[in-house]
Image (cartoon, rainbow, N blue to C red; front, side, top):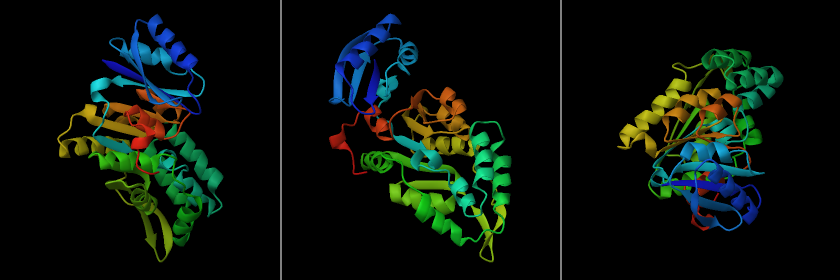
Length: 293
């Protein structure tokens, strides 16, 4: 048995649901039941065959509606592993930090190419950090306070899952100076990120090794599964960039969040319209069951 969950950015209408059912039927994935999670917001369509065909038929078919297709038996995931920048928070921290050095455009251009998979992540990270050499370390705290904002739904997602016994891991190619406090604010159980090196109150232009890159993210997922005695199908991974692809591919449900094309192509589910509360609906939680955001 499979579930296609339709989640509207604003309002989900009966006509949207009927259109989805028609599209599914055209590819042999006949829906035999529909069930509201929250009326006019999120609805499940149940079907017995054609998971991949249904996913392809539904994605992008309805205006401002995200679709998550998955096996019903795997719906309640027991591990969440998430990227930070442009996923759990709304900015790329290194780009914002570079603004305090007057170098945002230069650094952001490298970030964009790295997240698209056009540059080696580790080399690109070292190049961007090198540009920040000499910046006062106090700029990190200012940047965090002035620029970093949580993505809507981040706290509700993590705290709801933790309440119900799931493991939660924030793993970032960004920096501990941002990731550690963000992880605490959201409610993550553990946090892994890179460490900027500081000497005499200024950034040295170097980052501690080993670097948390794409393969580290994947290995962190595998280690968390092993530590909790879980199979890969129990994992939900969410991210937006090329360095998230290995962990997205390794998870039972890998989700690309407002992602770059490479990450979107690798994921089994894509959030294009909504915020992180889409994942709560995908996991079967009605709004009344969420922890506060």
